[in-house]
Length: 280
Image (cartoon, one colour):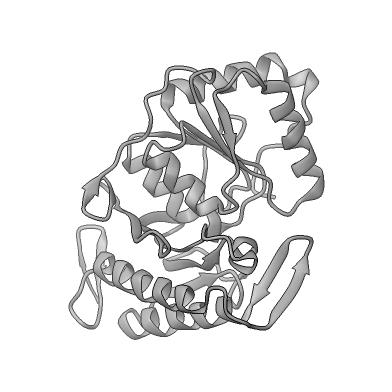
């Protein structure tokens, strides 16, 4: 393996960014070919599903990345969720938005990031339904296909469209709904995409002025951290602390609206049931 700046070069001579984008496209095509087709579904928890398509797409990622970077590790949702983050690690969600996928709702993506010692260096969030690949390389800006993207410049929460997702933790989900109830109508609108990875990508692209989530996993957030940073957005945990790949919560988007939201949240903390900060 040869490293040019921050980006490794694979066996084929392609950079890790080129490999990640190409494999994400191939994985997205596979997911889309199986969309709305009969298949085996396993229930992992309330609203948390596993399909044979998740496993097929994850297998594609594993084989393609291992062939190009045999000395890299892979952390993935379905088959390698306990992999550590030391060294070079690919973090993969084969289908983010599986509940949408199973329900025939065309809002899901494939998500991949390459991390070095836990810090995202490359990110790709590919939406095969709309032909949109959100991608970033550390220090190289954030892109939608071949067009640069920037986070929103909304000045306040009141001027913002707030994207949210509830996740699979019932207590945190109820607390988040309570927060939204307290906030409304002091916001333009709420949107629930059903895909945390797309929510983060939309914040990077300025489609959501803010995005909030209280129950994430590394494969949900790794790519989004880099996308939002490279798009010039603010990204922290829900209390304003530093965010990392193993953070369970995120607040991101417009820097001004992000600061305004944190101020509002502090003022109303006694009325809310906010989770503690951290990675647990």
